[in-house]
View 1 (cartoon, rainbow, N blue to C red):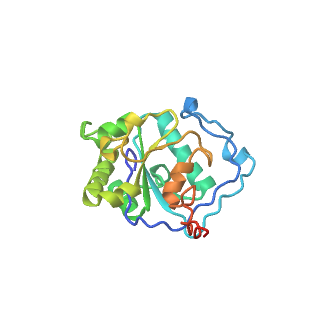
View 2 (view 1 turned 120 degrees about the vertical axis):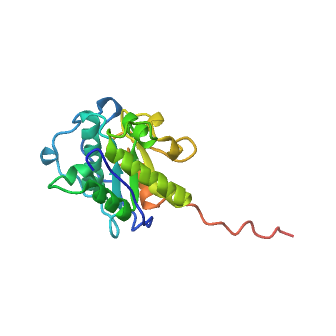
View 3 (view 1 turned 30 degrees about the vertical axis):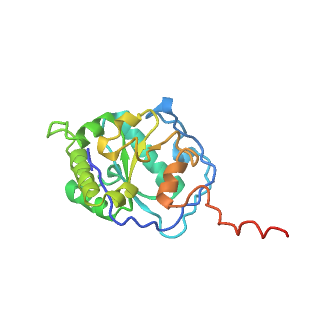
Length: 223
C-alpha cells in the first residue's frame, strides 16, 4: 500500500517457472532507478517465459525511500510479472480508486504464496521499530505482520518470506529479524533471468541441480 506492502500464507508451490528466453535490457548496480532499457512498448518482443500450472502469487513489501527506489521496485515487479510470469502484486498498481489500504495489505498477506521484502534503509528502520509512528505507516504495518508470522511459524515463514537486495542496495539494509547472514538472501544483479535465478529457484522449489540417484554400488569382488 502507499508507503505500505505485505505478506503470505499458503506456502504451496503451484508449478515450476521455466525460464530461458532472451530479455532485452537490464538494470545493474550502478544504474539504480534509471531506465536501462527502452520503454517496453518499443522493445523487441521477448519470448514469454512459460509457467506450468497456476503462477505463484508474489507480494512485494517495500518502503518509499525516494523516487529512484520507488521506480526501481516497480521496474523489478514489472519484470517478474511480464517477463518471468509470476503473479506479482504491488501497491503502485492498485491506486485506481479510494481504498482501505490496511485491508488491502491484509488480503495480500493472506493470499500470497511468497513475500519479497525489499531491503532499504527506510524499510529496515521501520521494520525494526526505530521509526517515528507517523512515517512509513504502511511499511511498519506490514513488517509487524511479517514479524508475527515468523513468531507463529518460523520454519514455514522462513521459506515464504524472501529478503531481496536490489541493484545498488546492500545486505546490511535487510531487517535484522530476517537473519540475512544465517539464512538465504537474494541479491539481484540485474533484471534478467540469470540475474534473478536464485530467487526463482526459491519460488518454484526446483533446484538448479538435481540430486543424482544413489547407485547400486560396486559388484561382487571377483574370486
